[in-house]
Image (cartoon, rainbow, N blue to C red; front, side, top):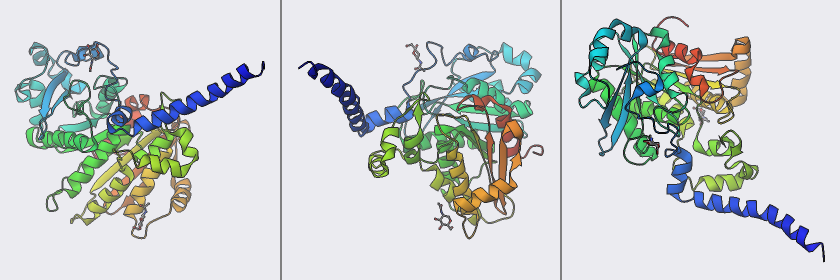
Length: 396
Ligand SMILES: *[C@@H]1O[C@H](CO)[C@@H](O)[C@H](O)[C@H]1NC(C)=O
Ligand SMILES: *[C@@H]1O[C@H](CO)[C@@H](O)[C@H](O)[C@H]1NC(C)=O
């Protein structure tokens, strides 16, 4: 008789987590809850800090101008225009005298904007952040500063909170985020009159690749190309990500299911947001090859840290392969490519390694650093350097 109690409690201890997990998976098939898990846009990592007071994140007075962008489908996106420090220094007297930031009702009236629009040599990074938080979360403010470090009198950054994040309106969807990115690109080209550069980590990498793909293929006769695309800690697609992504570095959401590939595949059919960055990058490369005219059409750099436990760096390997395969007329298997990479890579010791693949229409790079985890890497010189290189500025 005395066996029963311990036995039952053991059974419960096993069954309860399994049942809870099954329930969790079932709930994930509901698109609303799924979006909460994929986009994490309601995770507020900035506490009560006001996103219209960039001094909270250490910026100088009027170094950042918060402003609003309206999307064609009626959302209001909250954005930051960040001046590089070198340029700020040159105009400091006038900048500090302007009324304090808050949301600029008309950004074209701001000195910071005029410094961007009226300098024919100004360069602009379009910053598409990753899942969770907002413009001011985590390492993002540091990374804005790092992005212009390579040419601190030239490189401006504009970052947005997508619909549903921070104090932007609406709620996320794959199509909606692409609209947001297109809205920012249109603003950069039309209002600021700047040939732009897209850039971003994890989720933002998928948005950047989607945007580059849509601009290169959207209007057949008038493709728009970026100077370059720098993606940091990207993922190949959501289906591959679900098997490997670890929430808070420890819990692979669908990891337990990944042991049964068919179950995982079936579960993935329920996921609404697919973000097929690998296939889109390949289509983008192919679209660039069809654009007439000499000279490079694409310049894509993938950067990943070996100690990234959120999104393992094999995702960059996979993206690189899709890109190189699309750029080689006969294609290349991943095995052949890996062999080629071992022979041709630039060894940087504790700095990791880098490989480059050039074709007449463009260049793809994969740079794997040893340290930088998932987010801190964004503020590292390896990224500053990639930005400068993508603008064709200096030789690296
Ligand atoms: C985060 O939460 C705080 C406190 O509830 C609030 O004041 C702040 O506006 C929130 N921030 C965002 C970006 O939602
Ligand atoms: C690689 O390229 C070949 C030839 O263009 C194509 O048939 C194949 O689908 C590509 N593979 C991947 C994984 O993109």
